[in-house]
Amino acid sequence: MAETTETLLTYKGRPLVRSGNVLYYGDMTEKCVIVLQVLTTKTVGDMEVADKVQIQLLLTDPEVRMKDRILKKSEKNGLYNAMDIGSIWLERALSE
Image (cartoon, rainbow, N blue to C red):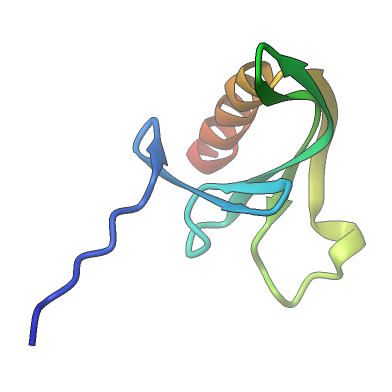
């Protein structure tokens, strides 16, 4: 039986998982994660790229109501800008 190793996509040393138009950045075992939702896309050349992206810093505690889990929320143009601010928020939240 061959052993399979799952390669996770990471950004700045943290897992990055995509499900449709939603990206989850961070480890679900830590107290917070970043959720990035691509709201609109645009065509550049022959590729579809993210245009407007909503960013949320969420608590991972399942005991907290979903409405109360959102610690910060913003909207940025482009996935790079969203990932940049999201990684800063996550680092600050986890260092507290």
